[in-house]
Image 1 (cartoon, rainbow, N blue to C red):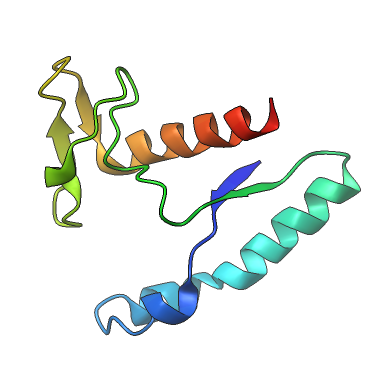
Image 2: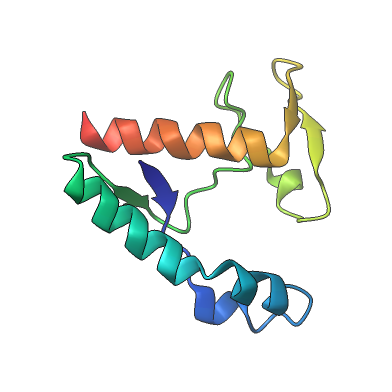
Length: 103
């Protein structure tokens, strides 16, 4: 199981996101993931919060710095023309980075 090592204290300073982040109980979720992973003999990995998971094309590895803005939800890789949903692409990159760290 892989997740980002997010700084929740800094994220709740953004008043637009604060309620959503607090409601999600991120700390409790990650605590439970760590506990349940260990309980079931699985590995739980947190990747660096500065890893550019949403900016990297999962297909070819191209880094698109124009995707840094959170308002950009979908984008097309200018190198390989693959269409990406920001969150799905980031999830794939986070998993791949976690697996890379294990192997």
